Image (tube, rainbow, N blue to C red; front, top):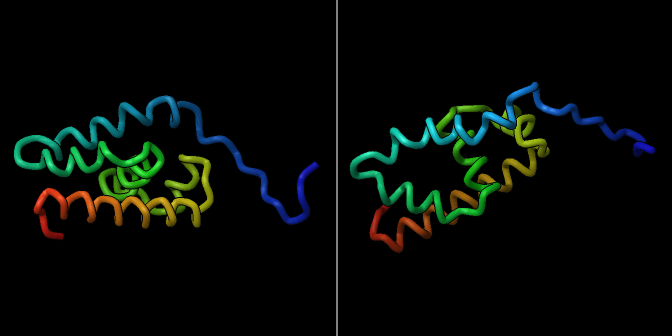
Length: 100
């Protein structure tokens, strides 16, 4: 039984989840060619959920609401993952000697 006031979450449209990894790969590959290996390495070091949120928000350019829908998370959860991922990327890039 659903809680009072709880909203039911619909699954993403057909094919969105199944094609997500391929789409992310296509978005990230052009940005990792040449001198952006440090960025690719830093992204690869993130946990999968954080990497997915960062890729969808900044590489694919989706707003928080759409990222929440596609990943089946709340907007607050997406914002939290994004915040933690950006902190981790800053720390990782600083260790490599790259300034923000």
